[in-house]
Image (cartoon, rainbow, N blue to C red; front, side, top):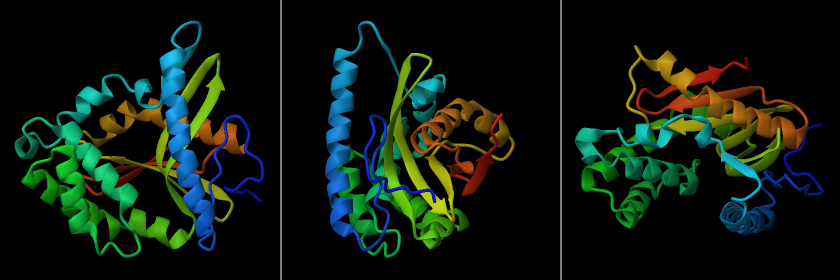
Length: 233
């Protein structure tokens, strides 16, 4: 049976205690996550000579520049801040009882330097998403984990990054990635293709760590509240 809480941690594996009763293990995992991130920063700082390191987002040409175009009228061109705010809210809010969402949006938004309209829009977007079929599917699965880090080697390159959500249905693993891009239905397909390299990195990460590919890689375009399941090529 596929397990997201392996007994031993290999060189590219991160323990994911999804069982609700293991709150202490979850707390320790968060500590491990912070240590992992610090290690990755050190690797990238010291590993510039003689080895190649790539992140999932680097597989998507000009992605960060594209993110800066999000909500230009609301943010004055500071779309990267908006995207960070939305992702932080998804990471920190209780998906089962998001009673503190408004307060959290205010706090996190001010910490990021977000404007009032950005904070309001981020709160509305996250609140709507939490009631959407994709996130209700995740919540009802009972086994999901946010901000899942990964590292793996392929063709001499070390890939590292963080997946927004990994959840389990029966014995299948599914990855969901939030996208805050300003997109409409006319260019949705082209946007999916734009992010395909990133999805392939996520798929390879699951394959490498757990020994089998994910059932789905889902891009959830929040502007449309539209989930798109990417098919492996």
